Image: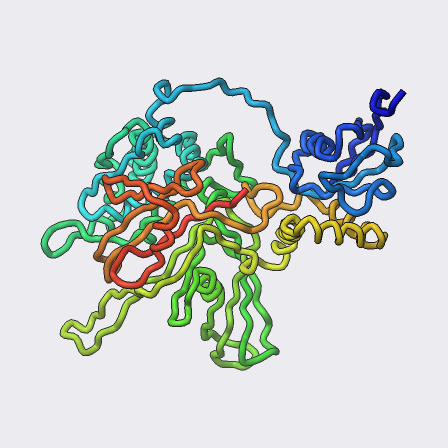
Length: 496
């Protein structure tokens, strides 16, 4: 009979991936290379486009989609090695079809069936409204509020503020119009008297959104002490540290004397700072400036004050990364009548992108964790022709093949931080922006901009109670320059 009429035998192979070994994986060569890769995806969770599949003696280099598997020297127990990071083993769909009219208001907001609600300005509270809208886009933060052991009944204004924020988000979930945050604003001003300052005319004064962000998270850190289903503390004390905390390594080195001992330490931050000078063009350049500084302190070996350079690097990453652009500064005015000075703003344009690569801001140990996925991504971007060429060279040079296999056996448990997805390359995606329009931090107007879930190009602009739709191109125009709205706080999340 002809070959097509014959039943093609199957073989039980041994698959080695990272530290795992799968015995007796049944392979049917007649189904082709693409079906084989799909089978490996179902087994390991490594998508076919990320797979580098090698089998010495069967095919040259890495397995191509058009490789014929029939006619090869298959045997039971043959070793097949695979490199690639997993995105999770695919699960069959379990949810039934739900129609829009059957959704709750909050569910309709998530699928953009109705516009999300804005927040009424209750006396120069735009700084608060914009920040609260951006934090609302962090689901784990919302969950931490829900599971927090708080009632607000004990008279503690800080706890009452935490309860008020939780209830405010619930009100926003139920509303398809704007919400008036009266209770939250009242408890906020009781908790933070500086936010209750008034102007000479009697109205409430404008405040700094970055200061509010830090004060708010400081209060929340005392009460968000319960882990949720979607996030774990993993050694951190509360949800704020687990979600937003940036573990930093610091080094202090004397510039004037090599004999002065180098001082090293660690600290925890909630945001990176972007310093702006006349030479700063991009957000990345400003962050680099913010991680290095010079200061004068006593040098024991010199017996006097000397100049030191402080260098900081990230040692563990947060899932949510906040960057503040240092646009406000105090300018002394000795020739003025009151000699007090004025609050000024840097209007210079600082370009930012919808993604942020933080690799260069990490210490050496963290860079080692990120390098494997980055190298793999680089190989994925190579064209088929180049990949085939490299694969042939790998097959011809056994040492190269073994090096690749050793890389595939790298420790899969190495983590870049709490909540960081497997195979993370150090790339964050922008999901929220707080902008400021005006010439000083104690005046002007703040607006929040939040990316819609599941939408690649759709954003919502929250100008107090008014919510309007916009696109990514509108967000990228917020880099600054002139008297228009410009980026002040950037909220990023780890990109899958």
